[in-house]
Structure formats: C-alpha cells, structure tokens
Length: 347
Image (cartoon, rainbow, N blue to C red; front, side, top):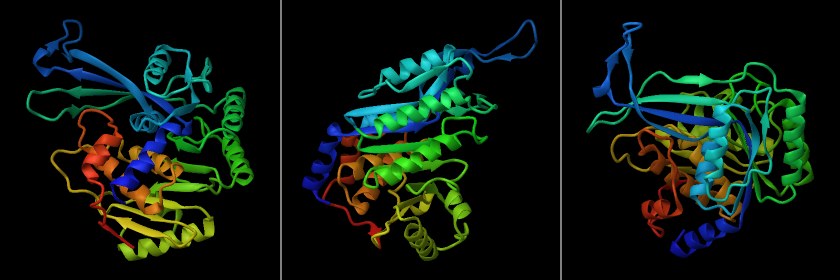
C-alpha cells in the first residue's frame, strides 16, 4: 500500500456511517497527587486527594472514541445508560465526540450506568500507577422493554450504515446490551444483508454468536477452536483458515507480541508482526482500536492486508498512551506507517 492508496482509503472515512451496539460504560479517572495525602481524623485511614477527574466513554465507547479519532462521518451508538449521575456524564462524553449521533442511545431507569472508576497515582517523572478499580455493573437480566428498544434501533440503522460493530463487555450473560434477543436480530440482519460488514467481539467468547466477522484475542480464539495457547504461528494459521471456511466470514486474531492474524473465506491469509515498542506501554484499549480500524478500513474498501496494517499501527499508537485508554488518528497512523514502506507481513 503506497501513499496514494493510504489516502484513498482514509479519505473515504468521512463518508461512512458505522453503528456500534454494545456495552457503553463510563471510564472515570481519578488523578491522585500522593504529595497531598492526609490521615482521616474520623477513621485514621489514609486520604487520597483527587486533583483531577477525567471522564470518557469506555467499553464499546472505546471503539467509538477510535472511530471518532478517525473522523468517521456518522457514528451511531446503540446501547443504554442508567438515569443516574454516571449516565449524565456518559451522555456528555458521547456528545462531545466528533460524528456521534445519539438517536439510538437509550436511558433506562431499571439499569445502572456501567462504570469503571480508575484511581491513578500521578508522580512527577513517572508513569501513572493505577490502583484497584471501583466498578459499577448490572447483575440482573436486562429488562425485555430495554432489549426491545435495542433491537428496534439495530433494525433501523442496519438499512443505512456501512458497518455494524458488536461489543459484548459484561461478565454475566444477559445483563448487558448483547442479549440472546439482540444476537438473534443480528443473525437475521446478517442473512438478509450478506454484504453488510458486521464485526463481533466479546470478552466471554464468541461461541453462540451468529455468522459475522469474528475479532478475538488469542485466549478467545483458543476457547473457540482447537488452537491451544502454546501453538506455533503455523498451527494458528491453519486453525484460522479452518474457522473462516466453516464460518463463512473473515476472522481476525490479535496475538499480542506476535502481531495480528487474519483469514478470509476467499483464501486470504495475513500475519503481521507488531511495531517495535518505543518506551513504556499500557495495553488497555489496544484491542478496541484494532476493532475500530478493521471496521473503518474494510468499510472503506481496504483489502484484508491493508486493514491489518492499519489496525496494527493503531494498536501500536494506543499502547504508548499512558494513564488513559487512547486512540489513534489517521495522521498518527500515517506517520507511523510512512505509506510506501509496507511489507512486514507474512502469508
């Protein structure tokens, strides 16, 4: 891919419409200055003084952040938040993102807003140190009334968007956005619109998901196939080819320090090693950056190889952003790739 091809793909981003259906959460960062630590008079315990609060969309919102950084034309989040303070902050954070339309984002009194609270010790000259998180989640099944709204929104946008991304972030099945009913609706849309790009990712694995493009990390890939974690790259390639042929859709596997592996039913097979580490890293959010860039590139007409190269570069940029769940812009990706110097992949 030379500079002309890079420009053609990325210039198409502003014309794309992409929907994300999944578990949107609030990432709330508490920056703590340890030099201001006190002892509570009432309890005798240490007091960690917060000097800055930062809020941004997390979970499926991390994918949205990356699509916004790529300047995708229109981004439709499909999900819910509770009618609580965290929900108010999440809506504000979503509204602030370029290209986002909240037509299909709902507020449910029966739900709490999924929230990751992340206390960080900020010391001069040192990387931020994350302390134990404080999470807010829902532990009961998603009400049918909420599920119905999600399915209706999904059906509506499926006729207008260029791609749909599914992100299942919850620990307990059925307590978030990606319920059985939602997956059934996705399956019907995939059959009705076989050319519509649909990419799915789930932290609990993709077993039981309909036949759409699968994006997995190595552990999830191992759980879904016979590819054990200690397999060499050649066996992983074989397993990826077998899965994509039986599945009928492209498969993408992130392999951490071993890069990204992708295969398509048409016989394409791509393996690209990661970019060299350039200092301290934080891998949080790298997988979501990969998902966003796969969807954007493929929807813009990129080949499997081109999509992998763009996603791989985005992941490298994100992991070098400390103390936040980062994003990668087209300009940052172009600077790292230096279009015209591609060729670090193996087939």
